[in-house]
Figure 1: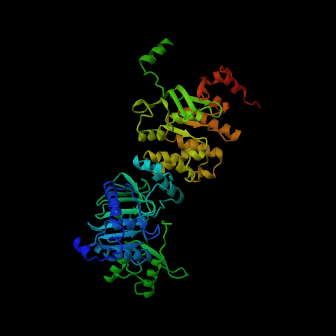
Figure 2: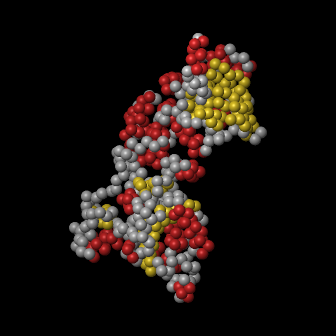
Figure 3: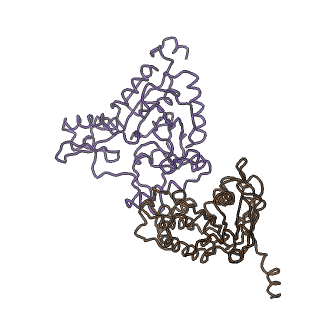
Length: 314
Length: 270
């Protein structure tokens, strides 16, 4: 540590990783408690970050508290490494912590994410930090905080199924596609943050540590490695993830989460991997999708990512 | 007759009351809510509580239904597994479980008792899901069954209660409460705010359900016609105290206390 301090590689106008040491200690204590009680929302004294609420202030505070000078950081926003939000958060930590950054999932030790879990399976020792807009899965059904705390405390989760019931009665199937509630370690119902339900099964038994930070709501929660994470469902309407009839137009992957990209105003569209690093990696290895030869398609895929929707955060 | 009494004492256990209140008092600072109220409720029995506004009826009902804790006195309830127990000594999760399984609470304003942005079927199914039902088809079938029992059209099962009329909302609230087959149901002015023809139908329905299912009920109302139709026994409250109690017909036809006499004679005759 001394050696690092001697030749500081970050902007020394700031403390290492922006937050002061006392704040980081406070957040680490909250994180320890969160890891000890999987799925339980721990309140913490959220700080102002140089970023608006809804853009990842919670995730940034968690990242700032767990990151060290030798870590390698990856930041993704809806799966993409090159969108505004991801680029600015990555640049922020490069400046205030001097850490190495990467786009490769397997090289990163800390991954901050908004709305996706990388397609490439995570390993032991990696930390996945989620940005969470609304940590309370029961909020839409029960507006009183005092009441939701009791419901968590006494494990009264019937109301969560009322929400799924409403889905089936209206649409004939469970139409919730993101922020799909999960039961963690058989005890706490948790919001997985607005990731697509496609990613829910990846949380189950994951070797990485998963940390969730909600800046506006000032809550932290966590899933320790190898923890049971079950998506809620009905016996006669089991949990299912999204499937696409198409393969990725650029890399031909059939098992990844696809974004729909409108190409023109005549109904033309293509489906591409939302995880840009996964897609680029596959193309490098020689996998080709039906539109891979078209240079315009690649450009389209990138430009549509930068204007990615911000549903669930507003 | 004597043989019957003998067999009752020897063969079957002595009839156990469902709820027993002893010396219940609740005041709000200087203001008295209810004072030294004691009574026993037997299984399947309907007790009416009448009195003017501010007489402490609702305070008493809130204490009995564990929504308010009393200053002094006890409320005991015959729990399925433990027998008579003081409901305020139960742990909070146990009390909450009791309130959503063995009890039902019908509020005067359906907005307090229903989830207005959840469909009728979801409202009825909520208690089932709360006690662990996880089969959509069964929950829905049960919901439809209860909608039929309270005379709501099955085609409205996916409509939200805010599109329902006042009378329909009240009936939906009753279905939502009865779905777990409670043994005791609390009703606070169940017909308040409804017009008379709707009131009559609702009372008819309630009377049928209570008799058919053998549910005990405590009904708070200022409407003597409601207790005449529903209640077996009657308690008349004034200034927080019970001033007269007895069989409904007895109290209404031969009131002893001056206040009860005033109350009975105040009813408008058409």
